[in-house]
View 1 (cartoon, rainbow, N blue to C red):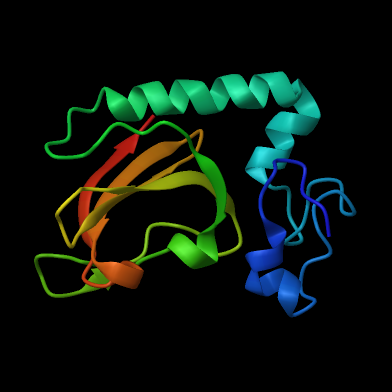
View 2: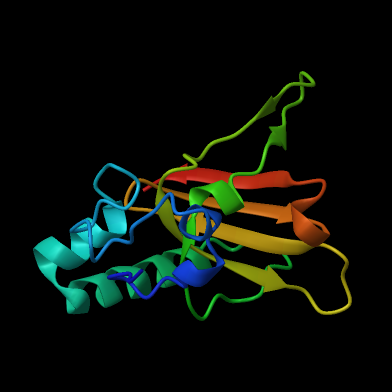
Length: 146
């Protein structure tokens, strides 16, 4: 199974279980619908995709989030792996992402800290959170429309 964006499909549970034929084989529709990352690559080219990632990196680094180290790169991530349930003040929890979508993201570890930052972004939003190992005890720091 091959990706258009460079995602490591070998670690994806959808692919391991035969639920995903890959985006090259499906013309950018690995989950039965158009992948937003594949759409950029197919319609605008790989160069536009790389420019889009760089623009997101600059936006994230200019957010000014205390203690968050600068982000140097963003990688394609499946929503099913990064869709954490965040606690709200009223005691409920909510997920903001779609499990069957690809996002650009990165984990930013803070030296000497047990918690790390997670960044997830798309054309529509930027999400920044903090969490412990394996996504435990997540805290939403920012969810911003782009």
